[in-house]
Every structure is written in C-alpha cells, then in structure tokens.
Image (cartoon, helix red, strand yellow):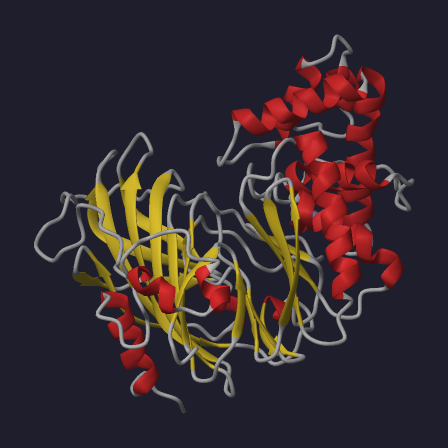
Amino acid sequence: MRTRGGVLAAALAVGLVGTGIGVPAPASAASLPASASADTRVSAPLRLPSSGAGAAGTTQIVPGSVNRSSMHLRAAYSVGASLAWGSGRLWGQVAIAATNESASGIDRIELNTVMARLGGLRLGSTTVDGRTVTPTVSDQTISVPLGGVLPSGASVGVVVRFSATLRTTTTGSSWLFARANGIADLYRWIPWVSRATPFARPNYGDPFVTPSSPSVRVILHSDIPLRWATTGTRTALSADGLTAKFDAANVRDFVVTASRDATTRQATVNGTRVRVVSRSGFPSAAVLSAAVTALTRLEARLGPYPYSLLTVSESAGGYGMEGPMTVWIPPRVASSNLAYLVTHEIAHQWFFGLVGNDQAREPFADEAMTDMATRNALGMRRASQCSAARLDLPIYRYSSACYYEDIYIQGGNLIDDARRLMGSTAFWRAIRGYLAAHRLGLAHTRQLLDAIDAASPIDFASRWHSRFPSLY
Ligand SMILES: [Zn+2]
C-alpha cells in the first residue's frame, strides 16, 4: 500500500508554497525548454489562492445553520497532485477560495468528483478557514460542513486533501478516471463546486454540472516524466521534467491526460493554436485537419472561440469527450466517424464550455445544440432511428438505445427545423445572442429555446409543446 510520504509528497508540498524544488518560478522561464516557454503567458507565483479569508483564526463564518448549499459561488482553485505512474495512485490537495454570491447564507459546500465513484476516493484532513471539519461523501459528492453560516457576499477558504487510484480498464464509465493504453485520463477529478447529482445513469450521458471559475492553478507531479495535456496552459516545467504548473481562467473544469510518449502536431486558426497530443498510431494528421475545419466553420456560426489554445488529446478509451479548452478523442475511432466526433466535441466549447448547463438534468441544452451545430457545419443532418420522444427529461430517463437518437438527433433536428423556418442569418444571430447573454454562466433549455423563439415572428412555442411539456 502506497503512502503519502516520501519524495513525491515533499516535492508537491514545497511546490505549493512556492519555494520551489524543481518548480521554477515564471521569472526563470527563460531557462525552461522552448516548448514550455511558449506556454508561459501568465506570471504568477506558485501560491495558494488568497481569498481574504482562510487563515486560521480569521473567518467570516458566523454561528448558526441554514441547511443550505449553493452553486452561486465565485470559486478559485489551487490544486497540487502527484501521480505515481506505475500504480495509478493519485494524491494531493485542492484549496478553494470561495465567495458566496447567492442571495442567502450557506452552511455547506457540495464538491463533486468522479474520484468518489471511480477512484476509491479517500479524504485526508479537510479544513475550513484553517479549522478541521469532517466532510461526508455520498455518490460523487463531498459535502463540506462550514461549521456555521457563510453569509451572502462573504468568503471562505476550504482545503480538501485526497487520494485515489486510476482504474485500469475503460469499460463503463471507468475511462473517465483510468490509465489504459498508455494514457492516463483524469476527467472531472478536481473536487469542484457543484450539487448532489447521481452519477449512475442508464446511458453515457454526462452526470455533471459545474460553475465556471475565474482562476484554476494546478501543479502536477509525477514519478517519471510525462507529457501532460490539460485545460489551460503550462506556465512552468521543472528541470527534471517531473513537475509542471498550469493556469486556466474562466473554465468550468480542468481535465488532464498524460502519457510517457505523446507527441504534438499543431496549427493556427484565427489566432487560436490548435494542437493534437497523441501517441503513435493515432491519426493525428486527420484529427488536426478535422479540428481546423471544425473550428473555422463553428467560429463562422457561433462567434470567436474564447481561448487562445485548443488541445485535442488522445484519451485512454471510451467516448469522445469535451472539456474546457480540451477535446478527448479515444483511440481506434473509425475514420468515417472522425470528422463528426472531432467537430461535435469542439462545438461543446460553446455549449457546455462558454455557456454551461446542468448536463444531467437538461442534456438538451448542450447536446442538442452541439449536435445541431456539428451537423450543420458538416452537412450531415439525418433522421432519427427512434420514435419521437420528449426532449425535456434528465439523462436518467432515456434508454441507452435511444438517448443519442432522442436528444442529439431529434433535438438537433428540432433546432435545425427552426433554423430552416426563420433563416440561417436570424438563427445564428439568435444563438450568438444566447451565448453572449449567458457567457460563462449556467443556462437552461428554456432560455436556449426562448432565444430562438424571440428572434422570429413564427410561433415556435406551440410547435414545441409536445416535445417539452414541462416548458411550453
Ligand atoms: Zn456531446
């Protein structure tokens, strides 16, 4: 049984407080390898986020209880984690500086992580403003009691220490947190402000909802040199290649792949660097070509991609997957399906990334719009192979056989029918208006449909009633 002691933990701990064995501060970026200095865009010390709270003895928490949590928190994340490649053991800590932006007080924060369902999560000491508390774990949710009430507008510092183990197969949902085929996948792993959401579902729907964060800083350490492909940009790399620092802003998650031997192929689209990170045998040239075409066509419809870097990474297996600034493509995708899959996951950068939604409870908002934009960009509209279904249900209510055909195909076709009726110019203008109105927020199916409806004199609401009986 591996322990938390030893060299890895020491390197991690030192890196987090910024005295830096092996983690050069950005001031020494000139000494970094060229590939690292190219990523060095943000000058920031390797420190935990300061919230104005968090030090032991100072707190804005007041006595009382309200039995309330909220996702309306402005939360900055500072994460340090070590990965032991051979055993798949991952351990570290997340420090969250959170301000309660909801209208009332809260007395707990709900953090979601797939490690609780897939990684055999074990929690170490958890603190709230420096005081040790006892969190509870249920399903994928860590509930952190604040020991009192955090009033509206007040801030708190929470530190959660964790350890988990990557799975070694990609079956079921395991690929979200696994090391297989020479690649480690860490999806939705950082304990992140969310709300209790069941992980189990009868299909491959995404059981996630995450508010965007203004600042995510991650230090990753490994016992052998790894090629990390992550959300955000790398801002430092230690001389021994074992420790890397990453920064991201305005993202709702931070996803990671790693391998020993990945290579990079890249291009530029409208000022955005697009890179494909993959192992040998992966069709990186075809994937890069598909990504360039996708980004070009999607930006023409949806407006600018909101970041300067888009990473397309080969994953351990499972399905294609979207993460902020990141797309995962599994190995061995049929060449005939590659352009579609790459385009679909890139389209999620707008619907999920730029404008988020509760992917578990309202999958229409991201999946239907994403697939519509994808098929429109590629000229791939087709009919559904399942009979007409309701489109306003949570992922838990769709069968594995028809989830894709209902939400993606029927949902996408319903949106595309609106485009045909109102005209492409008015339609895409309405969609860009929806993206601007909810930028970096969480929106609902109703708001997406209303944005389309409001942009045309056509009475869409009466057409949509049978498909969205809870909304129209
Ligand atoms: Zn999707």
